Image (cartoon, rainbow over all chains, first blue to last red; front, side):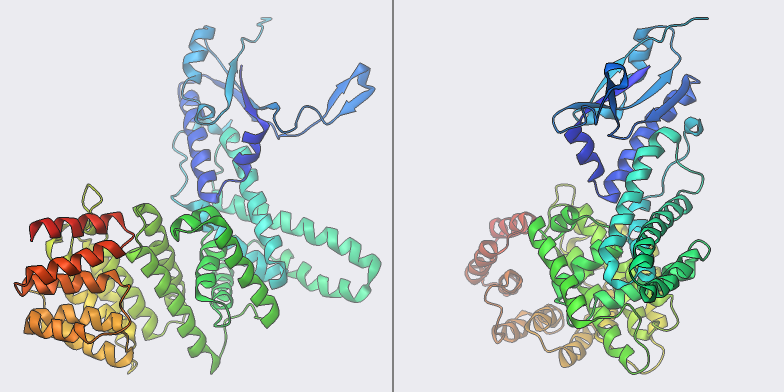
Length: 113
Length: 417
């Protein structure tokens, strides 16, 4: 699983782009994800909105989460099939998140099969 | 997972163009006083696309997706307001019902989209609004450019652009400017104002001293798109519109050849004419033919005529200079301005020689801070074998121009003297 991290400020700036810049951004991501899909290695992918709730203490405490200025948030994830973490790292290298201040986390999913 | 297809590429500038169209359509539906709301809805729609398309893939019909989402967002706003109004006043509710009916129509038809943009164009280019604000509004509302992009295009800062936009919106409110294409006797005058704004927008892109060619092209492209809107609508398709379009095609045809690989200016005489765009020249001729209907002769006709003569000339020397001069004479009679007179002198020099041209230019007033004035005079003196005077004027031009490519050109001329 490839998990996309970005500072909150980055996420906010992302949404303040001009229509032209947004289109360029979409093209970049589509190109990268399309490339993984073309190799037949795409399993699934979702984007996450930059807000939500964090629940603690058996659900007794519900907060708006760490989604504040300065904090890092998870912007989305992509699940790919790869023989190894190294191969997944290779697939992740062209990810547009590196064009900004974001980072990417590669985690193997436990295979119960 | 629809992201599987690597071929789903978006059309160039789709977002920018659709942002402009959607803002017009939504404003026509919601009312002119809700322009900002319409802009917000458009922005939210784009953000939603930005959040979902990279992961879910680009929809089969991206344009329809954008319009559907924008319309739903606008409907949500209207419904929410209706619920509030219903409680406060029945009369208001009835008024809102009209908006609701308009929103309930099937998705936008192309005709409505064109019509909305035209209405917006006429409202924005109202003579009560300052020209610089008109141009900023055209780019923001109709062109879908951001404040930052507009500031970049006009070599100014975002604050100035924001002020211009604010003033325009205030004027619209104060003057009660209506979102409509004027009819009957009001149309010609208002259309002239619209054409002037489009003409200036194009010139800003074409003659701009901006180092970034791409931004300048965007301005020219947007101006051309707006003129096309007028040309494709029977009500507004008058000869002057075709003439303006012809002018823009001829000028745009030479765009590539005007700047060399190092970003330096290439003068008309030195341009590689094979790099001129033959398609655009043909289009220009098409519109110029179209503009010949009726008896109306506008300054756009004359400027397009001059541009056409340059475009069809095989070489600089073989240009039909006497005809160019004749057109400049007619233009000067219609639009007496020292700048027109200055350019006329260039043609005069080709027909009668530099001495006549120097005499004509020397009598001009009001060009003391115009660097073209000194550059042209310098050139004329150079051709008249007066290197000292040429040098003096080139230096003055060099001192006055803010443009790096022009500075380079003038410096080169000085060393070659």
